Length: 82
Image 1 (cartoon, rainbow, N blue to C red):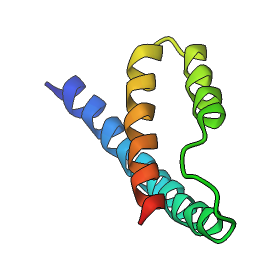
Image 2: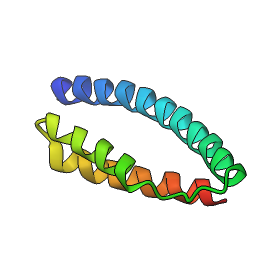
Image 3: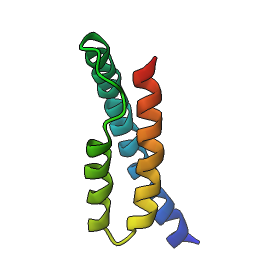
Image 4: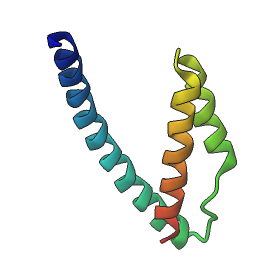
């Protein structure tokens, strides 16, 4: 059971880092949304999304990471539209 506890402690630490990075990413997404509104650009940038999703193929858990990024980009687009 100690092994599971130790592994979960590592996950908790990683989750803290991921959440902080997500907060920073969403703050930047909001800023991008403001710039897009000012310059009358559309929120959706398919070439940018393709670029990011293609990068997920470099990882052994590519399908799972890709799914996370699809969700992340959807949330970012929603934030930019507000």
